[in-house]
Length: 68
Ligand SMILES: [Zn+2]
Image (cartoon, rainbow, N blue to C red; front, side):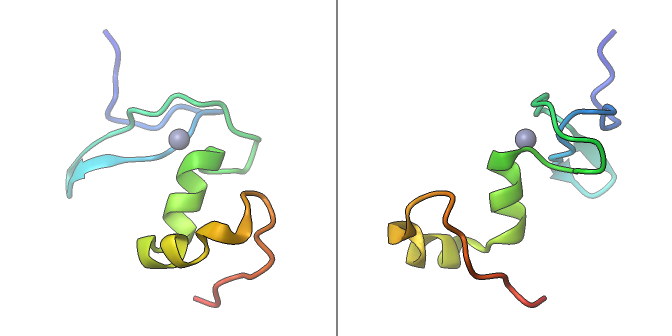
């Protein structure tokens, strides 16, 4: 059976669900040492309001980093 309760090595660790009941529905491949695929990395590291504001920047030219 497919165990979705743990992230798979080499795959995106994007989690969905409530605390204590996560699934890892994204099976995109990632580089070793990288947690998320491109799509989910942009979601994880950039808040939705900043994504909207920054939308006209054009994809990969993310020159600013958010100081957490
Ligand atoms: Zn992903």
